[in-house]
Image (cartoon, rainbow, N blue to C red; front, side, top):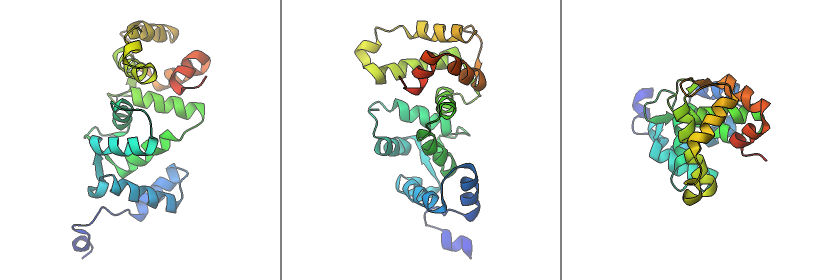
Length: 192
């Protein structure tokens, strides 16, 4: 009978999901329910949102100057944990929570997740370089970004972290390396 009643309706938020989200976030029941309503408005009425739906929500909620959708796409990739091309409500919640982090470790962890588009927990030279190219375009514009050699920037970051281009960087190496080098931390946190 419960299954028949739920056919044709928006996905429901269960008590178990609320309890799990409360345990892993600092959100109240009410905040979780409000977030779930926002998720359903963003296209998640089937229990998931696509990258395109996420882009719309991201632009609306973050209000960033992300015309090309680079930040939204990288954020989506970071939180599409099972790489199925959609985000469920739990993944969506963590994506939104990550945007609001203010402590250095959380910001650096989030930055790593955004750059690790393969989702393997390792950052390759090419992933870093690709991220730097996109981030530089957002920061200074296409024309000025074209004058910056991102290969050289990525190489210098890998050298700073005592790696060569064929090695991969794990999250702990990234976070600790950024914490030891203020300039590097500023690059990935947007701080001055």
